[in-house]
Amino acid sequence: MRHLRDNLSRMTQVNRSLIVVKPKQPFLDWALSLEHFPEGLELKQLRDDSTAYLIPEYELLEERMEILEWCAGFVFDEELRSWYTDESLWPAVRDLEIFLEWFDVEFHSLVFDLDNQSPLEHVAYGSEPGAPLIIDPGSNGH
Image 1 (cartoon, rainbow, N blue to C red):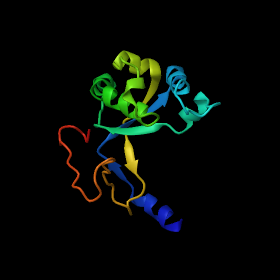
Image 2 (cartoon, rainbow, N blue to C red):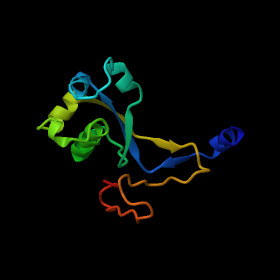
Image 3 (tube, rainbow, N blue to C red):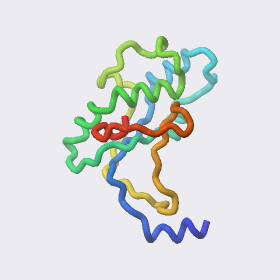
């Protein structure tokens, strides 16, 4: 653990901002309606370890909605997929309005890397091991 403490003096800012997506009651209701879903799951459990997504850097509060419009569909699908992959059981309408009914979103404009010993890496889930990672530079990885 000492090496981690030593790194703190050399932290760097990452050229991204981030959002934290916290499920709300409609998401839990959907999840509980699924077959083989853990009984007794509570909203607090879902919200305690929420997913964070790196987004383009922003400076003005007004830019938040533009960023959310840009990524809400992708994030909505990822949140659903993380619990159930059968898309036929996903809500038919997954627009920004429904997204905001199902999730709270926290925006964080500054992101710092406290671990400069390990390089940041992009991991393409679902791709073949060893396959090159192809990211459209205009897409922020999505």
